[in-house]
Image 1 (cartoon, helix red, strand yellow):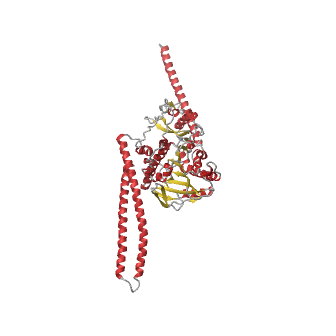
Image 2 (tube, one colour):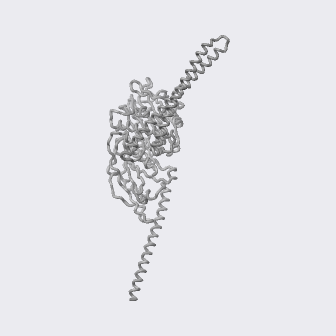
Image 3 (cartoon, helix red, strand yellow):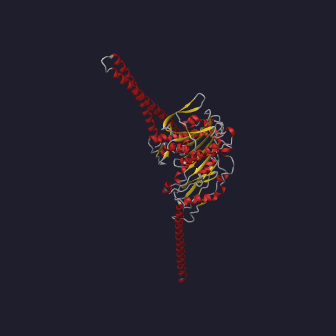
Length: 575
């Protein structure tokens, strides 16, 4: 009996010792994981990639699994030598501002595919996983790619194209979220274009005698911006310009000055002057955001008759923003954003029309596309689009919108290598758990190929530029609200233009009337004057001034009414 009691006691003691040993083992394992996690975080910070260690580990695992799928940019052929349009993406490195926010790198470019790794939490609020969205383009440049290589595959073929002397048109667009590196990329491309153009002109044997050369053609530059519906010459004191269309359908920018450049140094000096005069403002996404579309036109004209032999347009588009990011903007920033997004949507449709060989190009949808009409409708037109990407995890939504915009231009679908649906895998950073958290898993699912429906393209404004996912009646309501707001903003710009023009005309006419009054007063200073004539002429002047004041007052009231409508819709749309 005593032996049995002792045996039971021993068994209990052994179980307790075993539990203590297991507990101690768990504690050691947790401590090892804590140390390993801290060391991993230090390594990430040293590599310039701070942020959540688990998400960084998941991204690293995905890259290791797919690194073999990357191809060389020289593979596959195609490009602008064979096609009319080239769409590529360029990812920039993490910047200091993103590192301070502890953003991790959430974008992978493995040519020809760009993938966004969106960090997600499951419904329990603890388990972490990634949502991978992949897109295929003509070229995908990662953060290690130099601007020289980007130039070689995008703008370089276009320089040779426009120097052929056959009236060719070529356009390079830089598009992306504000702060994603558009202006930096375009600035470096402009420098290389300057060197390349004059090297080509000095030894142009590619197209024989009809090609442009320093002997038979001039190279001139015009730089202007489209800001808030207004066009301003950046090389000529920011003078206001007008877009006109003649009877032949040719679009002319009235008052735009062209300046001839005879060497790369003069070319770059004018480029720098244009950049200095460009409109920038602080926004929620960027302290120095380009709020205008800057267009640098390089024109090659025949020295004898001035006929246009080729034109290259370098377009640095204004930074795109989602509607949600303009909530705290003032009226000026809100209307700027609405105008920018509307013109970007119209631009997408025009570029798609080129690639799809459509008979109709909707270039009248915005001033930007109207000005670039000949680049869309000319049979000798080619276009390159460079979409710039911010790698930070906090910018994932913006980056997805940029990729969707670029993807819909050419309707490319990612292949099976990136589109396979696979089973969830455990995080490599989660071999053990602290606080009994469930395993962190990776969702390696890629959305199914997007529909090729080309109808109602403008109905996609919310999905492309606003980024909100709504269904049914709510989506229809948002679509109507967006259309109404865009129309109101357009009316506001038109009323503002009419008010400013009227005000300016009245100032000029007032100056003329003031001179007339001065002459009238001088005529009555002597002893011999006709008082009836004085009164009649003064009455005419006063009546004219009264009429001008009334006209200005009516125009001002109409403008204020548009301001009121815009304010009401802004509160409703961005509440």
